[in-house]
Length: 132
Picture 1 (cartoon, one colour):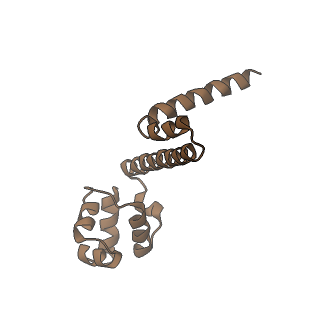
Picture 2: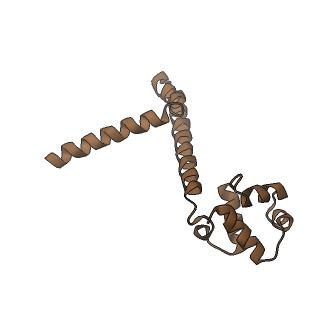
Picture 3: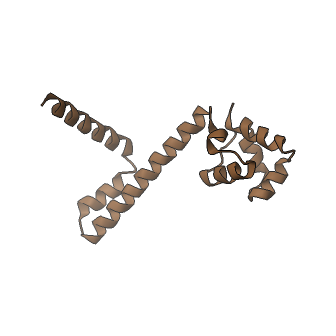
């Protein structure tokens, strides 16, 4: 069952309209409509509010919805990239290192390449240490 179907099921089980839900959680009726018809997904803050409003766990809301789980994972990776970049830029400015500053600027652009490179290095390290 998709996230939209889950949300609609929980709303209807409480005999609420989309307008009722929208007013109670502070979003537009159109947002609720889009969520229930899988045209968009609520952000994590709204998911938490919805789970509390319907008195269900987050797991109950997203269980079985692989596309939404993948979206959450991708968003989490993008945030990691952003925070690491921010830290590198800040450190680069503080210690006046153009190399570190440059890495902070380039990381979001080349995040997938950096991730593959680091995974490869870790894999090589593991294979070397297993051999000893």
